[in-house]
Length: 178
Image (cartoon, rainbow, N blue to C red; front, side, top):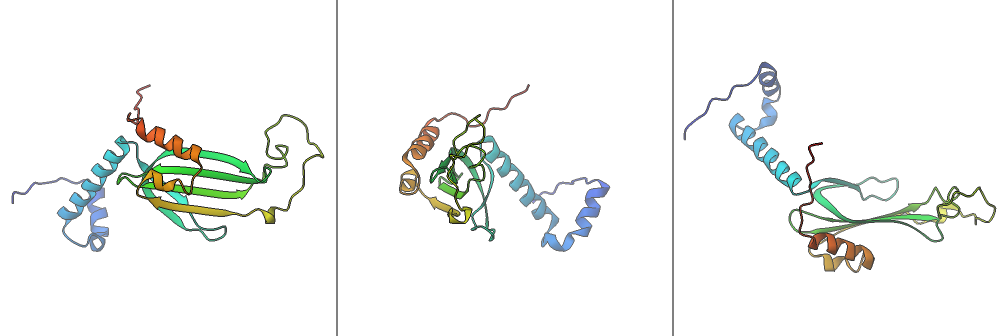
């Protein structure tokens, strides 16, 4: 096989020497692996995909899920009389899977927004008090092979929003030179 000479600057040579054991093989194979990763990442970014990080653990027990995806639908609402905030997201992945993520937690803005309803009015005594400990904090993370299979988890409006975005067929990335 023909060989090529690659010139490295002094800092790069020092870095390679310092991490020689971590390379685990030939320098050539490590360089090609890195080049393949960079090209794959750029292709995904050009298609509108990015690294998604979701904390799927219950409160106090962090569990991070990391994947390549594109946000196609989102919804942020209040429930239970405004005492709970519910955030719902649907992502699509480069391999064609669909991810549903839901996070429900105490709406700490309840008192400042008149029971969860945005208002410019002053504080009022007509807001019902509640115990934040009574609001269920939960997280849902589900991966399904089709959007239709998320229908049992996500509200119909969110599924419709995701379907419209997926059926749009246009590029999800617009590069602006402004």
